[in-house]
Length: 378
Image (cartoon, rainbow, N blue to C red):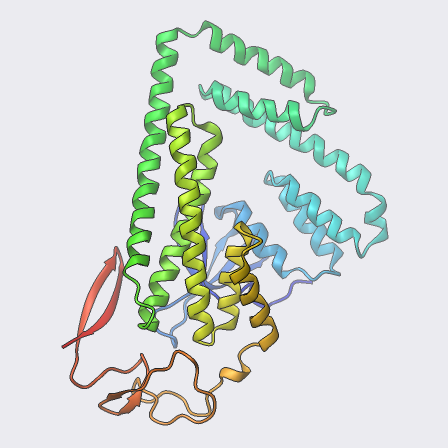
């Protein structure tokens, strides 16, 4: 049985295989479609559409789908495990079968056989990917994939074929002209440097966004930090994917140093975002940001404490207003006043960041391609 609750109330990114990104408030897998509820600029606006899950990165489909399956739904876990096997996610498939075995003794008894089957399928998949890489003229990548079969699945039936493929790879490398080999290597390194430059540009934009963030400007600060934090995370994933295939030692050293710096900046951005969401009463969003930090730094004390505070304080109830917003300002408020609220005079009375002082002018400021915020100037 699939649960209809959203994966998270915080903003999350959905990336398709062609590189397109969607900022989503809610993502649900229904059948062979992924239903996306976009995060709109206005709170009263909604836009919901569906795309085939085949067009989305498989890892993202897995985590969204897995979050919807109840712990006792063994059929759902098995169904997801089968899908993972079809798309090369063999570790995730094994995780789902183990989850299904917790509530189904029949599946539990079949785990040894399933483990052997998944191992054979994984070995075959890596062999086929290595073969494709060799045919495409990339023996370096083919050797890495073939070695994965040798190292991870030594008992597989694919071992003879893989050893034969390694011999073909060695022959290809041996009989290639040295000049052609160096030319091809230099071309690959050039492409890798170009890709690194693209990621560095994204990281620079994200750093600038964080540096220009003013935490007292609640709405603008939240948008900037969200934009920067998820760009840091995306660049970190892309750089880590590059490292195994980099052939230049100096380029590898540079990437490893950039990875450490980007991870530190990502942790800092998500930490600030978690603080801001917590102060604004967005408990689920604060918890989501805290989990992003704990994923890369499980011993982070600040976010461990944040997670404990969010879970102990019990959600949105204590941040609920008795009176709503009027004319972009809160004219009258009773009950709890959230920590981020700052009184100042507006045309309609006294309000918080949603209002503006009567003596200030509005000005639209572009902070990144496609992103603008409103600021107030004398």
